[in-house]
Length: 443
Ligand code: NAD
Image: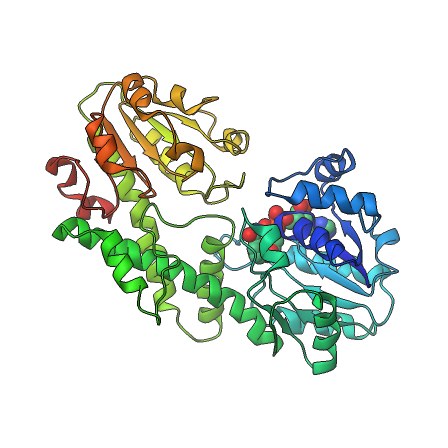
């Protein structure tokens, strides 16, 4: 059992703190956001993540987990300090590491020599070197331990990871951090700190590449009347490729892929290299959103005061996170083109309200359909798959539905009178004219 302090109580910090408590370590989680700490003190979580509430409650009860805003009482006894603060993009697209360095400086005021700083935040290559330089004179060391959890399944991902990556300057340091995870079955990859830092960006860029690739294929499918699901199935059966992350649709968003791709391009550029694929991947993703907006606008162009209903605001199901969510970008663009929007999300509506106050947020999906000339399914929440679609259609003022995640039953919806549109599925019933000039509009 180790004494661990986790800095930051966001998606990664909270899951890391609760996960390490589950591994029977003594964990203190430090958070500087007063509102977040106040919620945690009331036994409420500032974010939604399936299963996290139970895990946190269990380990507060067991005494393995506590929360504080006070470095002075939480750092001195720590053998390991995990840094899990945000690294948002700067205006130029680089990863902003100022929160990481602020956290490290705060730790330095109170930490004992021998304390190891474990960097979980996603940071540019070389950040660990700079931290090592900073902490060396205090008799401390640092490792990179990038986090690969996915929001929506974060607790499971933490406790059942595909691999644990530890980038350290020498093997005994890596081994001391690996021992913290000894009760997990996952393979441990011990590597150079810079490799660990780059591997995190490479993993996210590769996953985003798969989605943008299949989206590019979906555009071709629409043009040549092929079916993207059949194409994806065929290529996914190739063992060198595999089936995951080959779902066409509105594309990726969230707190990680967009900022990490920009940061990777910046890392490349500032080190005399180029990230050509990464830039193209981001551009393909941007165009998917434009295509959605164009198709919806064209689909409602015949009505004087068009209204589009949007189902789903979170960047993916099972999270309340709206950072860089495709739905928000699309809604803003629809509004800019004179379309009024009403929307629903099981968890994320309150978060979206602050950013898009002009949207009418409904308590249930049926109210979203009411009076709408077109619908967009933007997030594939399971509840949306089992809606009473006959009732949805009856409530609408038009017929168009754009299935932004290619998850709805096209034939069934068409039989109810919907005009079904998708991304590359051959089953659509969208009229030809909606498609005209899309290539130019999207660019
Ligand atoms: P987040 O914004 O949800 O949480 C960060 C938290 O750190 C906030 O609550 C903030 O108030 C707190 N904080 C900032 N400075 C602090 C300080 N000096 N002391 C104490 N608390 C402080 O961020 P997140 O989504 O958890 O991401 C954290 C890092 O992990 C980022 O680098 C991100 O790229 C990476 N990451 C995120 C995910 C994900 O799915 N969200 C997955 C893998 C890696």
